[in-house]
Length: 118
Length: 496
Image (cartoon, rainbow over the protein chains, first blue to last red):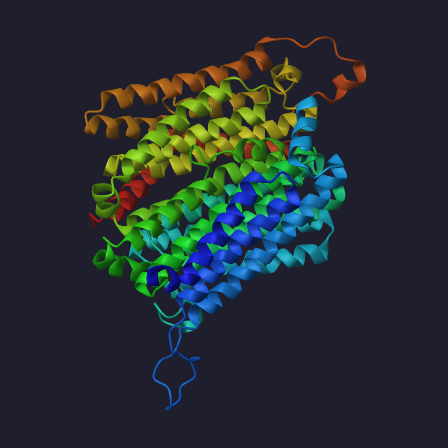
């Protein structure tokens, strides 16, 4: 039991990761796929942030009162990764807008069928 | 100015010029600016390579913060060589691009192509020179995002879907890579490649390190389209403008294979990866499947660009095959093929650019008798095609030769035969194109269409023929490429 509850943050990460991955693979709608991709990425962000957590640790500002500090580096890394994620989502959505203009649909199977026909 | 500053300038200059291109907007002017950047960075890549060959590694600390706390850029013989490949292909492709891109991209978007190209160049240079794994991830994403944008510039609407699909798969690959970096950081507390190399041996048998290796390998394999993770590649190269296909096919995959080499050999070390985990067997199977499925699929294509894309998947198989043999000769073959495949595939895609420029199509059925109107282009296609097959006196032969030598070193005769069989399949698909274009005659064309049918303009032919001459020159005079590849291979295997 302790094994499960004691590391609940990692379980959350795994559940989110699988959810996101499943949506990317299984869903047909291009926007839904991007949402799935986002959930997938966010799970990794949570993984990084929970890695840096230290029980009883405080922000890394030096003071006599504290002895344990959490590492700020993963947070910084994830800020960068979030920016990358935003850029990816923005580009993906822009592509979906263009696809909608060109095909009149954002359902993958319909688009695939239109490409087969021509 | 000391040469080590060139290391950072290599990355920063394209990055700064990219937004300037958006401000300039005027396409003829933008082309000159991008041309200057491309050839300028080629010169600095050349200077860096010479310096590395003479004095060994160059290290540059960003902002003066010493590694492992700060980010360092580190150039050794392997990445100096890859840097040279990217820079020279970039310079030649962009010289070629001027006419080709106007034909294949709508006019108001041409400056956006150049912007995306420069960002891609920044990303690729960054990936090659950086010595920090997280920095590596960011540069991988810079280059990938800009390549999605470049692919979506294609005229047909399928280009958009191809770019979307690449975006989804590419992002999954990058996120896998990020997970791997996270695990490495959790175990070692460092992101610096040189530092990781020191710390990992003590932690080798933990499950986290093995999982990290799995995520990093799968993530980067998705990026360079190792079979069976190649799903995004055929459509992306088919529907992208020819210039973009030529550039991406000959640089992106090479750079990501370089990243794989770094992960396997520098970070984890060959003994752990290949002797303990026996990852080489997986790579061997995957490479052979890539060679055969890629070549066979190429035979059945009716669109020449798609055929070349499938052939790229097969050629990536040869590079990975070389790596999976884990010997100096095998690695040498893999590394030298990075360069050789880059110059031949860029030339082949550029031929398609020339043909599209005059004929508005690269479908085989429309190309009957093209050779009569465009002898120089088709001659280039044939020489590059022979090089792809691996005929002596071309660069392709050099790669195949060392690959077969490496197979024979292990007494794997069957593998040598498999490599030869793969070459025979290449004969089939190259011959199909040559037969249709040179030996079949087209049905009568209307007069007005005939006027347009002539040789491609010189501004396209000259860069194309520079590559063709390089194909022959480096096939005859192998001293430089093979020597550099041998030194890198020995260095990767820790023999120096």
